[in-house]
Image (cartoon, rainbow, N blue to C red):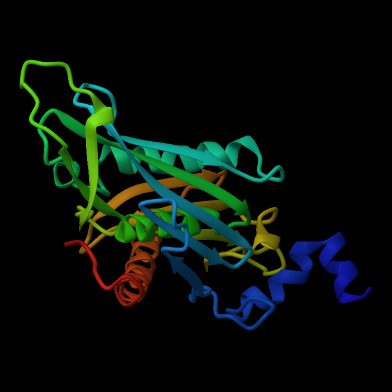
Length: 278
């Protein structure tokens, strides 16, 4: 049977010899991440934008600021769209990760984007478009959101004429100036994906840890784990799925790998955007 036919008919039989040698079929070590491509500032109609590609996933994020009269409505709103090939679970996971980061105040220091006029507020609308999807789409999405926020600048606002403090605010008379200040990020969240593969050809089955697993292994892995980490030991979000329990030692190993990716990717973002948290 040819290798291509074996991969199609029995993927576990095809991939296991490679995994036992500690590599993916393309020669990448099971402990290495694939490269991430980041482009920022390309969407001139947005206040901040980023396009991130990692393996077979590409995510486009644009940040828009809308001026509003100060009130109780949410100030940070995410919308997520995906390709037709994406199932509901994938989009639900994307919403959940973003929701957790928003609730945990992982991203933006909302006080730093307060409007300079106390009667007004900025509503931050983040449009996330998953253009293509594979096992690394959450990693690409979180990197794109982080990069877009690092690219975002908040303009100052003034009124053309003095307004009585007790009078209703007329937004049409507000002037958005060219004087801007950058978002202040609470942290720089970075996502990393992992999986566990259980052998079947060995005399005694054993678990193999996979860093940044390839899409073709999705049907044969027994568990998957996504970490969103920040500076130091901070874990902002963790998503686990699959039928195999993940022990504490394995979680610690995944966390160590996630910290390594955080260090390398934040260094790259610093070079691209010229700034980090402050």
